[in-house]
Amino acid sequence: MAHYLELFASLAALYVSNILFKIIYERLRFVKAAHKHGCKSVNRYPNVEPFFGLDLFVAIRMADFRGQRSQFYARLHERYGKTFGMKALSGIQLQTAQPENIQSIAATQFNDFGVGPIRGNVGAPFLDRGVFTEDGEFWKHSRALIRPTFNRTEIADLDSFERHVARFFDLIPKDFSTFDLQPLAKRLFLDTSTEFLFGESLQSLLPQTPFDTTEFMKAFDYSLLGLALRLIAGPLKFLVLLDPAWKKAYTKVHAFVDRHVTNALDNRQNFKGNHKHQSGEGTGKYVLLHQMALETQYPYELRAQILNVFFPARDTAAIAFGNTLFELARHPSSWQNLRTEVLSIPVDQKITFELLKSLKTTKAIINETLRLHLPASRITRVALRDSVLPVGGGPGSRSPLFVPKGSVIEMDLYSVQRDPEIWGSDANEFKPERWGDGRPLWEANWQYEPFLGGLRMCPAQNQVLTQLSYLLVRMAQNFQVLENRDPVWEYIEDIKMTVESRNGIQIGLVPA
Image 1 (cartoon, one colour):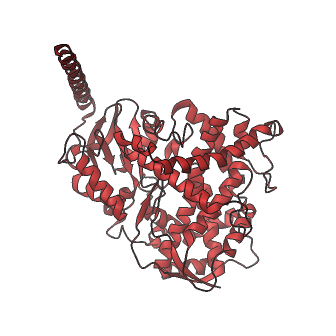
Image 2 (cartoon, one colour):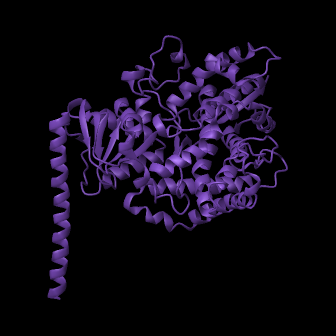
């Protein structure tokens, strides 16, 4: 017995010594950075339970339950500074809502920060290595494969998009009855994303589709929910693995993707030397899976790479479109301004990429929606080496901030894009007119980054903006009245890997 006690005491002493060494070593590095760069300490959230931060973790989960997580973090920034440290069932995490820091993390000090240490293993077994989870050369290679999917020629191909939009309009009630637009929007972009990813659309909007779209979308949404829970659960992330419903959901998603992967590998000889692969819709578009099948013969790797693109491709544009209608239904004057601009387009004029870029009111409405409702309101990075951010330390968070290697830092884009110091006292209000001529250059100052910026900027940004513009034009052409039918006026968040309206988009429409 005495032997075991001695062994336990030795292990405990070794553990404590290791912690003390890390604390002292980090402190010495901070002193060096303070001397060289003028770094100062960051303000800290005062945890009641200081060891794990369980009190703050519970408070954040309660905000989740209310659908107000983003607002909760914004209030923390108001109280503890635009950059502060906190514990929430984790080690010390840094929270920043300062554009200077976001620019440094995403662009000027890009190589100092990454995602691999926090995303790499968390996504498994649903989501494995790909452009969303990796850093370094693997990420660069994955990004290079994806880029041609979103080039200028592919984005400007609106004829292909119109085929799906026409089917979408066929399913919209025309009798002014109440319906939820969000599921229809997700089906629309499920069809378009499967076409450019797999070369074959699911055609979920067709009345006779053989595919069980509802079950698949439920499985995909639950898979993403499990992934989001693993990302926020810290040391308790293993509990998600014990959920049999999560395994059932991601197994269904894997089976769907695996069928397409097998088909692509069986036909890979047909793809060689042809970067514009003929899709199942006969469009001759660049098909991502076909190109990836030329790079690897491993089915598991192909599945992982495609899934890393599939979930943002399906969700980002659908949610952004729904959010735009959410705001327009609550602001009839903005809807009428949109219709005025759209109806000024000659009836016989074809809707082209160039025409969409010229529509100022349409663009302003989209910009304002994305300012208030980002596809992802918070983006996490981890320091891959010791780094110094330009601001965040000292009084008012205005001094340089030392960020030790391994530190987790979250960029709060929601708080930046609703900061009254940047946007004025009406920062929380939907006002597209703020995007008129003579406005401040918010984008250049990293104060407006709904798709982030830098090398990890969303590659589908231009495609999403083009498709949103096209959909708004077609909506304004086809419907004269858009009315809100949601009894709850406020936007209630439902956060998975993206942020959407928990209540959906409850509206009524009158045809033009």
